[in-house]
Length: 487
Image 1 (cartoon, rainbow, N blue to C red):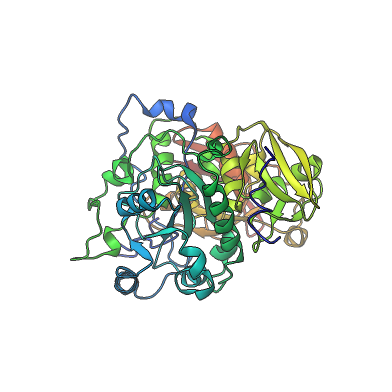
Image 2 (cartoon, rainbow, N blue to C red):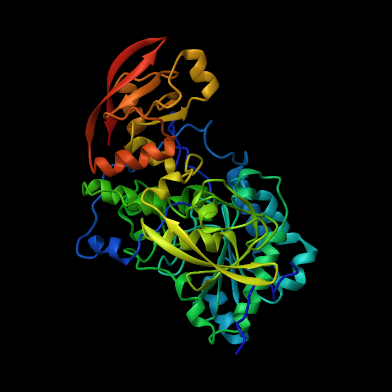
């Protein structure tokens, strides 16, 4: 039989820092990641008991912007959507049953309503008349909380505040969707990429189960927990969450945000003084991590290839349409991120591309340390790691221009401390004597230039538990020796 190109055939071309009272983060619906089955073995024979990292407090001025009336936003969403003719509201069980009955694919959209990030695409997907006929080809479910989410099925980029998963009626994952383009710009309403993903998903669903082998790599991996409520970090919360939202009380406070899943998995490793897997530090790597930029209005069309990158070495070209990665058919940028997420820390991936109607097989080499090129600075799940590494400081690498002004080597470590936490675990750096605007030039013997994202990985791989590291800062031009906290 001729091989099917699912692309060309389907498309035309954490909570927050405490300021006297509890303010729970209504951030990105999503965060965290899952490790593969090898990394999960340590969870199978012991109950994870967590007491620390139960409050990942961060400054409200530094987190994703939320609506002023978060409670009203959630209740308003329910009032608008619960009787919608197309969307099943917070009802996965009915969604899967209807998908089986009708033999339609199941589209599950997950949305953190109070978070303004992705508000544009959320509104466009819910209301856009142009998408209506396409959405009618799916059974559509809208989820606004993660309390009872089945973690053996739902594994995606938890740091996004708008994400989607597409299933066959039997629970087989057909594809994922999630856009950092929309995440960074709440006014971004374009749905071209989303539409391209749905078109391709429909084609794959029509070929299922005959194409099951080409979907195998998309399926979830072993999970140590059935639901977020089973994760000790969430289960041990001062005000226990229920499986359902508290519509009779404070809805927002009763909501489990997906980023807490990743927070809990990371905290479990730290509690046991085990090295934190790189998959948890750098979840769902964007294609840019290996040097690929994918056009946001496409399914998976290469828009740019970074010179000197792994993608450039593999032979990618602008305009390539990514068809498959290691045999799994790709229908979105999120599918690419999943493939990267599941790859090994040193790996070779075979990527099939459509280049002007011709098929090309490219070998993408993932060298040691490739994950550390992932930019995680804006991820919600990074804030708890700022407590683990450095005791609550946010740092930025000084630009070449600023280094020249200060007489600093362009190849040396030079992090400007732009934020020092004031409360709880995020105040450890403050207690150790670190100040805003200090320039960190040495920590644990590291003096070479790094990004903030890279130094997370290096120090978390060196120190599985608590430690007090030698550090040097420049304060008004003078060297000051301090103890850098690892928690």
